Length: 324
Image (cartoon, rainbow, N blue to C red; front, side, top):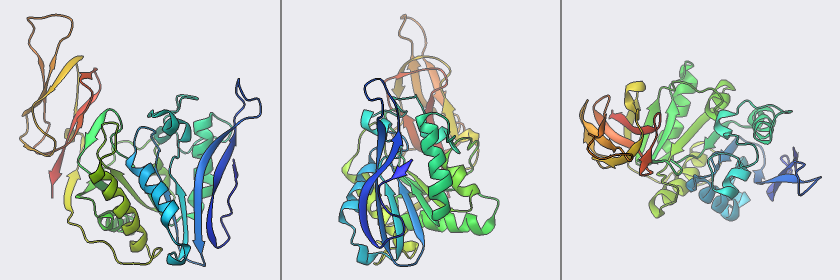
């Protein structure tokens, strides 16, 4: 990977991360990943990424806008901005890369000699993470999930790091702030950054394969808030009401066991009881059969739900989080 921007010079620099990729229509071709570096003297470094999954748009929009508008004089330290971490996936509007099928957020710590997706992940871990003090990685639900807009931190064994991540997530100022006990972070950017000792904040800001005015506004405000909280950007944190949610265990998740047409019964954000029917899965191959119910594993708020009208066995149908 060859960056076309400097990381150690003051100013604002737009360019690319250039990754060699020999393909059928370009023998000496490259994958070009847009990047912006803003530096103003000594100070902490923030790494801000969107497009880890290519069908999630709030992050890429907010990061691109910030790179366009930020005045280097307002920065103390350095901000590294990558609006489309999995650039091939973002260009295709897909969760995974059309080049190698790679899911970026299941590819860390990567492999410098692996696939295109693995090489990008490895360069982030080996080159960018060591520079960073705080990492903000934007996500939303993509084409298959829709979320209440929230910022999140994970429950971490190091109490100081845990508290720092939680404080940064609260500073983001999303309508909801979530503390998540990660069941399995294998291959995820989250785990790679947290194991490297970084302050890490992530989000889920809507979804359904589109961006909404409200969720883009939340992303823009949250990006600036996190940088102000980290003493990197000048200004005052934009006050916003945020309510706390907890996802303590796998009872929060409801998965489909049958295929069919999903009929939602409960709107996103509604209070639900343990065992309540959240949706019905109707068969498509015959009439005269009862639908399969999808039930809440615990009481709480319906925080995310499956979006497409068809659902397959193993698909996440719903997530219920617990108000704190």
